Amino acid sequence: MLDAVVVGAGPNGLTAAVELARRGFAVAVFEARSTVGGGSRTEELTLPGFRHDPCAAAHPLAVNSPAFRALPLERHGLEWLHAELPMAHPFPDGTAAVLARSVGRTAASFGPRDAGTYRRLVEPFLPKWDTLARDFMSLPLTALPRDPVTLARFGLAGLPPSTLLMRRFRDEPARALVAGLVAHVMAPLGGFATSAIGLVFALAAHARGWPVARGGSQAISDALAGHLRELGGSVHTDYEVKRLDDLPPARAYVFDTSPTALARIAGLGDHYAGYRYGPGVFKIDYALDGPVPWTAPEARVAGTVQVGASSAEIGAALRAASREGRAPDAPFLITVQPSVVDPSRAPAGKHVFWAYGHVPHGWTGDLTDAVERQLERFAPGFRDRVLARATAGPPELAARNANYVGGDIATGAASGLQLMLRPKLTAFPYHTPHPAVFICSSATPPGPGVHGMSGHNAAKAVWKRLRQT
Image (cartoon, rainbow, N blue to C red):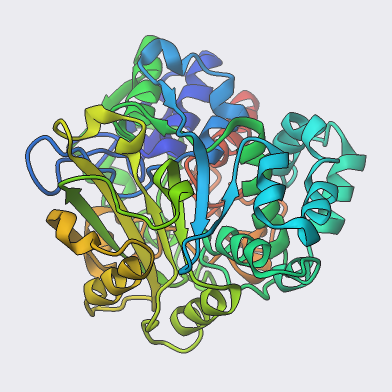
């Protein structure tokens, strides 16, 4: 009999499996798709030779993840590549705010009236970032805080809504950049603890950047799977699980799935009936005949580019998708251009690029024209560079990855108390009513992103049970 079976070979499922195998448990992973990866895959979606990431492409949380940093993933082929700038936020007039590795360069891009405010906001946390990241990403009760004082100070700064954080700044460059950082988790700007989201992304950039993985995000998943096999674990693909009886006997079952899927497979009834899913996204992967012709020079050398003319425009786009039930006229876009730093992603002289905007949950429309009109505001002539595009709205995203219910790439609304207390209001979020069944997906703390910490934290709960039985 196996000690543990993991369902779903995304970063969290693979990390949970690795953590259990490291401790001597017999582990097997079962994945419905033909390859491992979940939200960390790479595929030729447009033309031969153009390697796209269907979901995550830039990885500030992965490179800063305590779980990943403790594993020999580089030995299994993972290599981080850093653009000159982790992120740029251009404006229609050709200027840009930037999120640089240097706090000074970042602050300078906001202008003299806000530079000091930004420094005072982030500099106290940077010397203790590694400990803070571990404490923040290990909550709730999976580990005692190593630095409770710094964690408490971070809580005081992060728990208020980001609208209050933005009021600290006097000019639009800083406000717009912060609003864009918060929008990465599709949370309304006025929500609880949204300031923490912006601070985490900013601190992650200053600490270790927002890199891409050489060859594509698939390299992260492949490295985790390679290390798991090295530890004696096994991975089975093309294996769809519809009920627990489809799996081999094991002492524990760990699900890297949505709560909805887990309840259906494990027969948990309406246990997760109160769990909320958030807005969806509409994503476009592009094969380009050259680099994106950004007007702002800073955007041309950034790995990630946020596209939103102002904090008000970004807030309006989020409200439209999350509260008003409509696609925004001027969508806020998160874009990544991996081939700026990784030429292996496209044929010589060509580029890959992706952009997504927020849309209502389950939306079935086509946002392509609105996305490209928005891009043309900041990169005139963009459409002329397009060789091919692959579009995916909420139905297509959910078909590619069952965890993206209604196109929600966060596997659950990251707003209100559910931002931190997910999938239920409990001190034991990885447990379920079935004593041998656990959940480890992004529906559990610390939430969305390619960081493996949900799997890492869930594995602690699993091995404590295995040692008791």
